[in-house]
Length: 274
Image 1 (cartoon, one colour):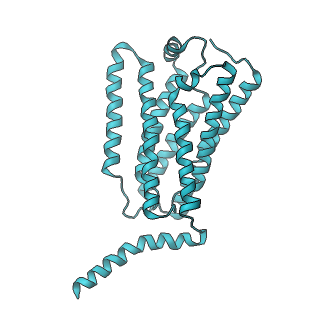
Image 2: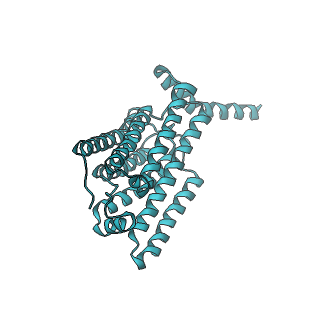
Image 3: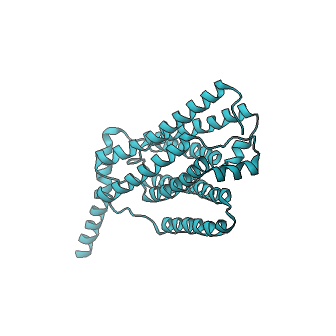
């Protein structure tokens, strides 16, 4: 089995990984606290949350299975070489567990706080249904031959696709509203830091092992980091460059967003009466 060649790089790997864990984990709390403070989830896209739950659940299955299962680890080594290190670290598993729990809690907030006319779209429901139906089909295919590495790789592929898709509804919603109000920028900044550190952690392992196997051996983690960085930079551009909103204007903006449809409907009703 592979081992670290440099104690310094091993420590660096662990430090980067756990800083990434805390950064990504803390990235959930600004949105949760913002929802609690406003007692509203107006501005938070529900499709994003549902797709995010599918994404993190799939990623948890992949990380936990590869990290804890000797059988899957053996299949990994048979495919990529017994001299290669398992590309999933303890911080990856811890993050996935925390991410599923916090996403579930945010979905709970959607049920108890003011949400206006927002709802989960039929497109999101369709995508989620297809994703989990595909997962079930993969389980059925993998079961007879015990192709567990292939199976969890399928879950890894699902999380990569969900990561690419999940940000799109929120980005489009920000564009349509010409505002990022209700969408926490603190979440994005911490998410970006976690993505960069996650990628750096994989780089450190590659330097120590003098191989790029951990990048394509865990292509899901590689693509996850790249997708996170890309979309987070997009959200940062939207928040600070395209649709900047002063804090003191926040309450008025939310109020106007909630009242405007009522005023419009009232005007139409009066016009009809005349």
